[in-house]
Image (tube, rainbow over all chains, first blue to last red; front, side, top):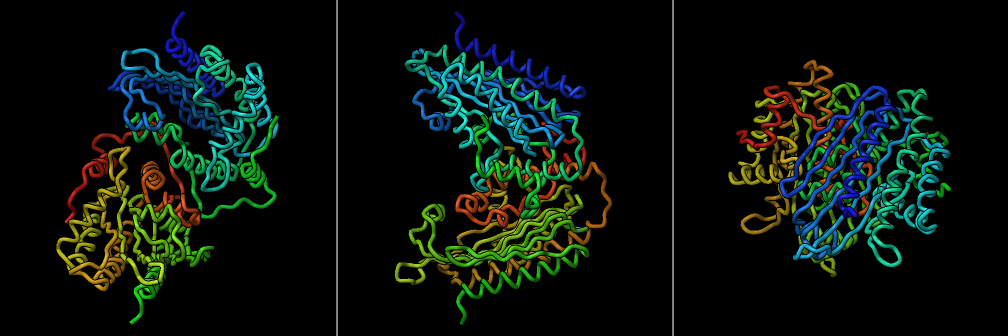
Length: 303
Length: 303
């Protein structure tokens, strides 16, 4: 049997291909450009970015598989005593052109640590996906959550509520007392402990990963042809500002990557193409824009 | 003789009026709107923002004078043992529409701490100004620095090199290994210690503050009527992304304000109106855009 390391590395590359192919098909115009990079300490990654599409204004789908010596800052961050590591994962952020289509983020990753003799000392799976609409369609939110819940329920009915709540807690712009979006799933440190062996978490994480396209693609298909005005685009750009605020102020992955000299352009590919900040911008009470804010201020149960 | 508290509070309000008046005159179209706010724990501020001008796309000139009990996080941040404080200051960020006109930031502030009996336990002045051009005009950079050096030299010839260097060190986007702009002055914790009484630092800080308009206004006048293309604007928006990155990732004042529940809209008025992130954007070698980057990667002596 192949190691989880190899199996998960295969998985992220297959998923990267599958997702990029689907997104190019949805877009019908733009194509992903790939940059392969090597990490001096060991390993590397494949960054794929699509820009200026008719559906996706900016989309990044990155994989990386890195290994070697963990910097002290990362040992502290992960709260682990071992300094030899392997990590692989896929991370994506899609910023659609059309404000009726939500932005989405997802990542699925696997981590191993080794003792000084090279033996496996620790391992865990992690990941999740979350949706950031500019206008709220309850049926889209429900579809996104239901698709994820269906996968979770095949493993344990306690998982969806637990990881949905963790997602709401994590993707929160504390300084504005509002959520980044309408959530999804967020899970971390899924270690093989009784009654769940590593294989259980491998299957869970990869099946959640395979649910990404079924969760997101139908929403794109429903909304991508809707016409929009400059006012809708303006609101999208204002909200994208909040996305930038979250990623630069609160996102642990982003901050950690920047502090440990990760590849800047791969880390910051998550930032939207065009963004706007206006002083004290407030949507008109009763407007669709105000309706979105209400949901962001009070996370909702969607299924 | 009035207290420094009162004198500096008067100073920042006079300077706010003077600067806003000058900027409205330079703009010739837009006007500042004022929001007055109260701080629940004591004091408040006046935020003035001008948006959509023909010269200034977004300009904020804020004053605040606050007092009361210092939150524990702020005592730790300031590394002081006292929890009763007074702080007042003026802070401004000007984002011109025209990419030939540089963005500028300045702030001048005064701080007091009190012992449990209410006596003055500590006091200091702080501030500075720095210029962020999108295209480099050496004569503009030299004028900005020379104006500040002239003021500094009236107090001590060691000041300009010291505070110029501190500015280069502070306004640095470490994650990109480049400066935010071409610098200026940055000074902090100017306490009354021999041979310099509080009055010396009061005069120094207020005279540096009064040098703001002479340092910046002539640059605006020289550049504001130059014609620009969509490509110039595009580059300005890319560079504004770096400005946002600095303010959200590195700027201590911004991060501190957000963590201590400051008034969000006053803190984030520093962010530009329209901003752009493109994956792996690189200017053409030999272009004016590339020339700017060279200077940002290697701070220069301008006088």
